[in-house]
Amino acid sequence: MNKKFMGFAAIAATLALGMSACGTGAADATLENGDKKDVSIAVFNGWDEGIAASELWKVILDKKGYDVTLQSADVAPVFSGLSTGDYDLTLDTWLPVTHKTLLEKYGKDISELGQWNDEASLTIAVNKDAPIDSLDELAANADKFGNKLIGIEPGAGLTEVTTDEVIPGYGLDKMEYITSSTPAMLSELKTATSKGENIAVTLWRPHWAYDAFDIKDLKDPKGTLGEAEGLYGYSRLDFDADYPALNGWLENFKMDSETLYSLENAMFNGVDTKDYTPIIEKWISENQEYVDSLTA
Image (cartoon, rainbow, N blue to C red; front, top):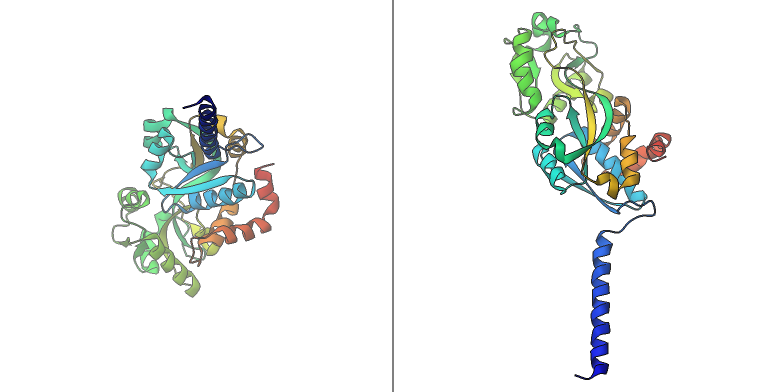
C-alpha cells in the first residue's frame, strides 16, 4: 500500500469516527439553556393526577425544544427505574404515607424535586345535597343510600383502608360494599348525581370528579382514612446536572387542587382518546398566565 493511499485511509477513518461521535452526540444533544434535549418522564398506570401533570409538562417542554417521552409503568418499577437511571423523573409520589416503603428502599438512590400539591387524601364522598355530613352518620342513614357503598378496584390501597379501617370504624358492615373498577364507580356517581339520588363512593383528592360533579367529602372524625398527603416529584441522581433549567422549574412547580381538577376534567371526563395534546393546548390557552409562570 503506498503512502498516498494510507493517507486517504486515515482521513476516511477519521471522518467515520467523527460521524460516529456526531451520532452519539445527537442522543445527548443540549438546548441553549444547557439542558439535555431528551427527557423521560415515568407515569404511574391509572393515576390520573400524575398522568395529567406529566402530559401538561410534556406539552410545555415540547414547545421549548425538548424531546419528551412519557413511559407508563406500575409504581414499584418506576422507583426502581429512577434508581438505575432508566427514567429521568416522575411527578406522582405520595408522601408521607402511600409511598413511604418505596422511599425507604430507593430513597438514597433518587432525588426529591419538591412538593407540588399538599392536598392529596383518601375520601368517602357523597352528593352535595346528601342528608349527612360525616361518616359517623352513615350507618344510621344507610337506607337513604340504598345500603350501598360504591368502591373501586379490589386491590387498591383505598379499598384496603375502607375494608380494614372505615367499615369497622363506623359500623358500616351492614352496607353492601361494591368493588369493581374506578370507571364503574364514576359511572354510578355520574348517574346518581344527574338523577338527584343519594350515593356514597370511595374517592380521593385530587380527582377530576370534584370538578365534574356536585359532591362533598364526609368528615372522618376517627381519622380512619389517614391524614392529607403531599404530591412530590422525584428524579434520578445527577438530574440537576443534566437539566439545570428544568430542575429549577420542577423545584418551583406548584399546582393547587382546583387547577388540577380543571385539567383532569378536561382530559378525562367523557373523553375517549389518549392523544391529550390538543386538549391540553386548549386548556393552556385558558390558563396561560399560570402556565407561563411555571417556566418564568
